[in-house]
Every structure is written in structure tokens, then in C-alpha cells.
Amino acid sequence: MKIELRFRSFTAIKDPETCEKYLDGHVQVLKDYGITNITTNNRQWMSLPNVHGIVAETEAGEVVGGVRVHIADGIHPLPVEKAVGSMDPNVFKIINEYFDEGTGELCGLWNAKSVAGIGISILLVRAGIAIVNQIRLASLFTICADYTLPMVRKVGFVVEDGLGKDGEFVYPNDSYIARVLRKMNAETLETADEYDRNRIFDLRDNPTQLTVETGPKGDVLIDYQLVIPKYED
Image (cartoon, rainbow, N blue to C red; front, side, top):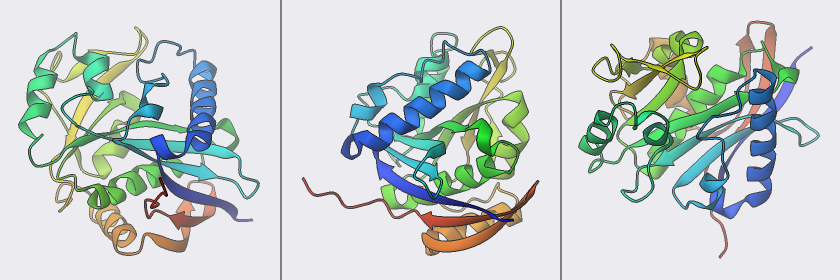
């Protein structure tokens, strides 16, 4: 039997209800894994005009996963800067080198236990990268734990070996090693695996589509609604 989900894009400051559902789900997942000190796990992003997100929703409207894209605006630090900037100030310097062309961060990825193992994390990551053409970002950063490193490398992120200790940071606690990665080019995706690159380009060209994705536990039917909405003031 296919699992049916909708992936819907939103702008944080314009959709407080979705923000609350996103945060509640994310906090619960972190608690399930014993993580309570994530710096990005706060409410500030909800009030920033430079934050866009994607939520995975069930047919009943329950939010069971999500990911965010933060645009670097020169005013509010990106989550990765808050997370590890105190451990290595070079994080600020590297991100600033890409500021003029438009850069940002893919962050806040999570999925609920109810959909664990069906493969929606990689689908959310692809979708998050797919929408950056709508917000004119030429590059993208992310921070990830060891166990998600293969996934983010598939979509083209490259470890910044010059940061931390050979690219490694002890974050968010002593039980985890994190790495800061950069997407070499968020427009051409030349460092991504061919299959992932083609799927991301397809989502950019066709941001509204109904697609059967094959996951580890079988097929998942995704109703992609990735056009960032135009909101009335």
C-alpha cells in the first residue's frame, strides 16, 4: 500500500500556524533522541522574513517532517553560524565569501517516528534544494551528523575540511560529530549524483507534481506543492 504525503512550501513569517506544527514535531523528534540543546531549535526563525520551509503532511493535515532554507541577509546569523561559530570563527568568513552571489543554509531537517524509515528525509532535502532558484541562491551550506553525511553528499554537498578539526565539530553534544558542508553550486548541482541532480532539476521545472517515489519500505506517493506562495499583506 502506498503512503501518501503532501510536500508544501511556505514562508515562515507569513504562516505562523505551519511554523508551530513544524516546531512541535521537530522538538518531539529531538527529545526522542535525547537532544535538548540544539541552537536552531528556537522560535526566532519564525519571525524572520528570510526563512522558507517545506513540510511533509499526511492527508489529515498532520505535519510529519520538514526542512528549512535560511537566506543569508547580513543581519541575522545563519543557524550554522550560531551552532559552531564560537568553535571556529572561520565559519563566518567562509559564508561571507559567498554572500554577494546569494547564499543560505539548508537546515532543520526532521521526520516523525510515524514515517521513519520510508525515505522522506532525502526527498525533503531534494525539495529544499529545488526551491532555491525561487529565492535566487547560488550556493547553500548545511551542517549534518555523521549518519546523514552519505545522504547530503549524494545531493552535492562537500565537507569544508578547513573548519573545526579536519572538518569535524562535537555538536550538538558529546555523543555526536557534526560537519559543515557547502553545496558547490546550487544552480548547476554539478557535485550531486546524477539521479539526485535529475530529480532536483525536475522538481525545479515542475514544482507542482504528483510523483511515486520509491523508498526503502516501498512506494511513497508525494503531492509536491513547491511553489513558494504569494501572500496577501
